[in-house]
Structure formats: C-alpha cells, structure tokens
Image 1 (cartoon, rainbow over the protein chains, first blue to last red):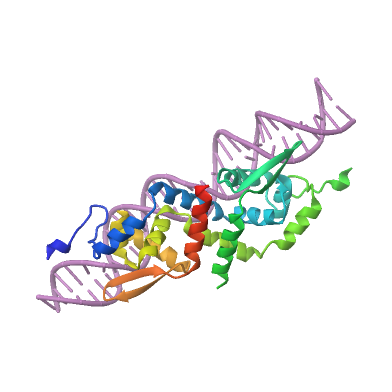
Image 2 (tube, each protein chain N blue to C red):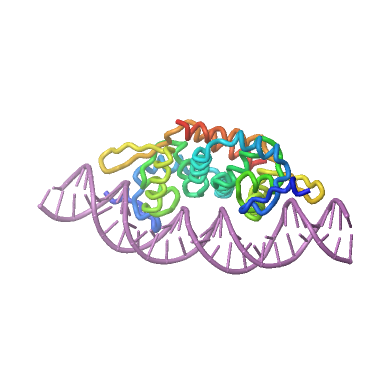
Length: 121
Length: 121
DNA sequence: TGAACATATGAATACATATTCATATGTAAT
DNA sequence: ATTACATATGAATATGTATTCATATGTTCA
C-alpha cells in the first residue's frame, strides 16, 4: 500500500489526490506573478491606505489635506503615499511646494467595490 | 492671515483645501467598513494564501493536497486556511478524516483577476 | 481497543511593517 | 538671503503575523 504514499520532506503528509494536485500545478501562474499579486493586495490591506484610496475617489488631494482628513501626522501619510506610488496605485503632480496625489488606475475602484460587496454579504 | 491656518494636534500641518477635505469626509464610508475592507485585502495580501486561493480555482482540495502542492508543511496550510475561513473566502466539507476546502465566494475570482490585470500593465 | 493518519491548534520565533520623531529637501515670498 | 512652509525620508520603536514545532483532536480500520 505504500505506493500511494509520497511523503515530501517539507510537506509532512502524503499526497492523497495526485491528479488534483497535478492539475492545480498546471493552472498555477508563475511564482513571480503570484508574489506580485500578493504584494498588490497587501497595499490595499491597510486601513490608512484604504482610507487614502477612498479619499482620492473624491478628488486629487495634497498630503496635508489627507493628513487633516485622517487626523494623522504628515509623515505617516507621506510614507504611505510612497507605498501607494510604488504599487502604481497613485500618481502625483507638483504645483510649487504642494504635491497633489490622485489615483492612477481605473481598476482600483472596481477592486475596492468588489471588496465592499464581499464584506456586506 | 492666520484664519487660513488650522493646525490640528496630530496632523502637524494646515488644511489647505478645506472644501476638498470636507467633501472627502462626506463620501468616506464608516470607519468599521473601511477596517473590514482592509482586513479582507490583507487576507489576499500573502503569497501562501494567494496560492491556496489560486489552487482552489481548479477544484476543492484537502489540506494535504495543498501542502504537497505548495511544498509547505501541513500546519502552515492549516493555519492559513483558518484565516481564509474566517474571512469567509473558503468553506469546507468533511469526508471522514479528510477535510476538503473550496472557495466560498464568486467575487474572489473577480478580485483576483482585476489584481492580475493591474500587475500585468 | 489501539494503531495510523488527517487536521487543528497553542506557543515560540523570526521577520515584516506602520507610526513617530527628527531632520532634510525644495519652493515661495518678503 | 532668510524665513515659512509642504513634503520626503532615515532611524527607532512597537506591533502584527507567517511559519515551525510539538501536540491535541477526531476518524478509520484492523
């Protein structure tokens, strides 16, 4: 009966349904893609950043405005805007010393709204 | 000129565009909603959980299958399945000692795919 | 009943990260 | 030039969390 047992070092259990596992392996995207995807959702997965995103649905805002709105200090907002920028979720334009941030992707609202639908159920 | 200055204790800067801030404040969902939303995306924001979700697109799978597929130990998978379960992203059925997990929400694929579209740009 | 096994779970550890503080950078106005 | 101000950023801290280990729970089968 040991033919059905296929213990892996790290898995510490047997593969019960090898066909299922193989099929799943085939449809799995590249490691890098899955990593990037997790990184993207990680950016959405913070209350402060979600609030910033939500605020920017209304209109572009400067760092100070966002800090005032969220009652948080300017540095925290600036750090989070950097994260959002790196994830290409926001873009900015400078007008003198003021930096206006706005959303950089149409899908953001869709992702946000789908999330809302899920939690409202 | 100090009428335009409105320093808050925690904000450490002035509100530059009060009208914008007020409008944003109006459209902001409840604190709790935003918190729940962030919590939901946080669940998507982990490579292991994204892989589990992706695997379950193919079919339901037991804990062992998932552990084998991802080459991770059973305990790690079980812990993560609990997180997914608490977020109501997966459900399970028991068949003897085997527990089969499957996706519990149609929106998951949509959210996943929108994320993919974003990172592929 | 007891052995084998699939899964769950608590504790510990290691690592990631959000916020704050202090300060730097860059711009505008006097 | 100097002052005031908006923003950015590095370091430090505190908190959160993913994984592992050990073990418990619950099921099946002999």
